[in-house]
Length: 560
Image 1 (cartoon, rainbow, N blue to C red):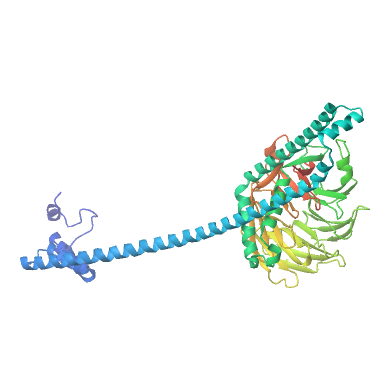
Image 2 (cartoon, rainbow, N blue to C red):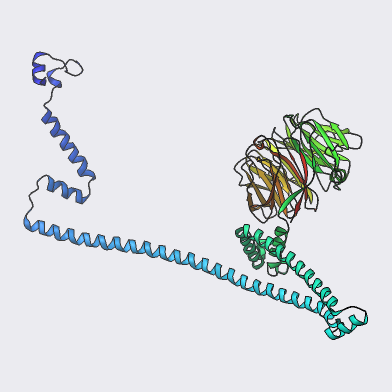
């Protein structure tokens, strides 16, 4: 309907029905003119000179032909100037990019040339050693050959002894065959080691270059130049250690009497001070102590513990006293920390200050009276066997999963927690950590010292990380195992680190290589239901213990 017709009949709005007066009615063309003027004024106040010109032309401004020519000339010159400036800017950006690229590539070239020089020097050194070794071998062998008689003399001697020359030839042929057999074994060993090197070639190459770089810049390690003459010796030690082993061989196995019971998880397994006994503990609420020699030397299918100690609660961690052989400490799900005398299966001390589950306990290696524990209550507790209450407490504000004394000093403690970090404390100044190591993406479940300066940590982000606690720097990240939910164990010796996996496998890493050196799968009814739950190295030995959630314990040894 026409608006005019509607308003002639009624005095309300055709849309909303509101009552209208003549004062509220305006012609549309008048309103449109007002809005246009307002828009033009608004644009004019903020428009650029070019916009002003465009608006003037659009609105039909009267401009003569001469003015148009002048404007075109000015605009053309303006355009040329803008194009020159844009070209100059683009060239400057391109030049900067090329310069930076050249500098980067030159730096890479310098590094490659340095690497090639190191390789050239070390190849020459190795070839020289090989030549020297060969000459030494020939010198040791030459007197034997000089003492051997000539063929004519050997023939006469053989006849004199009633033996034929043909018999002498047969003996020489057998000796030659033996030498060839020995040579064949050596060649097979060389090929096997070369294959191991190729399997981890990139990591080994990075390790070599790192060692060589450290030899040129001792400040990186804090060692004198004389201790790192070329870096080749250090890398050779790593290479020799890495290629020495390729597999884990089962030496002995301890099976749980009831494999189908659900509560068989071994939470902790530890050797005693002299590696004569090892103890296990877990959700079965019992500490079992086995004699190592009896386990590995017996052919029996079932191995019984030498001592069994019952506990009121499920056990989470064990730690042998490093000085008092028959003392062992445990932490449990009730939050208690207990010291036991293994000889008589009795508790000596029991500490009950933790408000929640205690996950970890550790005796100081340098002080037999000192131990430390960590709990879900976020408290780090330091205990002395000389008193009944804790001597120190630190509130971490996060669940503590693992604690470990530095093996060379009872003043320093590493703490792993649910905040994804490792806090390294000097107990003489407990107000704040000496350093906090960050890098893990999930809870830190274990911390262990490989050496007094090297700390390895495990996390449910499926990585192990190695840190230098002297320089407070990360060293390397180890990946390959799967660990997203459970405690799977962690242990280290001077060269190797071992941990479990939720694939029911034991993984062994060389600390200088990021990928696994070898692994061993536990046999089970269903691997998806079981996982490795605890591991432990035998001191200064290629032997380790591993236990899984089914309660099976294996003694494994690294082999070629």
